[in-house]
Image (tube, rainbow, N blue to C red; front, side, top):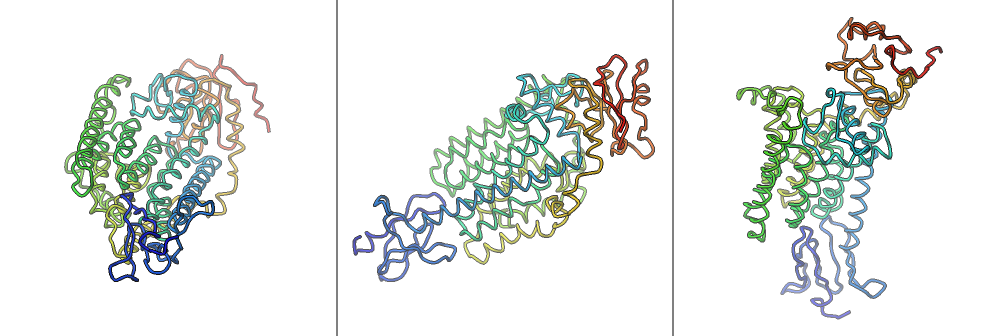
Length: 531
């Protein structure tokens, strides 16, 4: 190695992906010179001092005599492994949550059943006809989510609603990897890992996991990879990633357009001509798909010949009330470390917040359910984009993000995994399995929400809240939450005959609050209800 420090020290690569900055001594000699991702000391031995205050690591050739290996190289490999570990643990945590929900017969809504039927149809190379939504209902007439065709192979390998819960958990875990890795590169290993964990355990992802599978599960990693590519200055890759959002849900076309405008108009980034071209192409792409999906595709495939959700809008005044909306906004600001509001990326939240706050559906307004999941990678990216320079202020920003999760504490779904009863099998689970077995294979069955998703792999499932053709079976959960007090049926056969005059049903199972009846002429599997 040369004794000249200006030749001996390799040029560190800055953490933000910009061009390497040559390292060398200052005119005064001896003291350190700042060079991108670390501090290079130009005294007797070339070393790299990481930004997070770790011990200086000597730079030198690899044992094989190949390229120069610096302490920064080793640090980045460590950061990659930490990011992968955060992602893996995130996936495991949310998969465990979904598994315990499945075993405990917890069904917050009919959505898991709906998406299970869609996955089943795609696995059989059929259109996504979902009888739960209505007889012959094509789910591509409800929301525009062609990306969900990827669920077909998953269902073919594992025909269960639990497979969708695990898939969502993996997608959330994958989304944590690029964000945690970039955070560690920019903030140092300790601070960046803290931010990565705060993102992974954030209230938006936890609430979405509790609400079970929804199409936005695919949007979360798409946004994470797209926004980290943008922050690294890889604008084409960012545009390609973000452009995929139009295939997740129709309203995300507007989010794509907003991102394109940010890419084209932002002044503090390099290569303005290329950004201008890519940005406005992305704006056009997003708006075209928004209009095409909302006004052409969805009405064409919808049984009513219209877009179903325009009727859910409230008045202009209702956009600003109730207080739940302000609480949601404050939580998002804190999740972005407060300083994130200085980043143009925070504008990507506006399309989603606009339709949520304009909607006359209370579920849209608060921090629960799955509606804030796609805002979590936006908040993390905005924080990284606007992160202050002083280390103390950086910790305060990361602390604000962590504080939101800590304040909610036991109210967050993952806290449920710490409760011993969570790991006990529900006393009703054996009865539920027997009730499902009482339904004939590939028969039609009408049911409430409790066993809707588990039934999909066995039968053609209908929701009892719709007007359906008389099914071969009815399966009712007397203890289900869909019944008003005092109205829960105690005899499935009587209930079915009242609902479908002129039919005759016979009860074949009645245990543990579950009641199954078969229509005369239906396929009776010969289930023995005696215990």
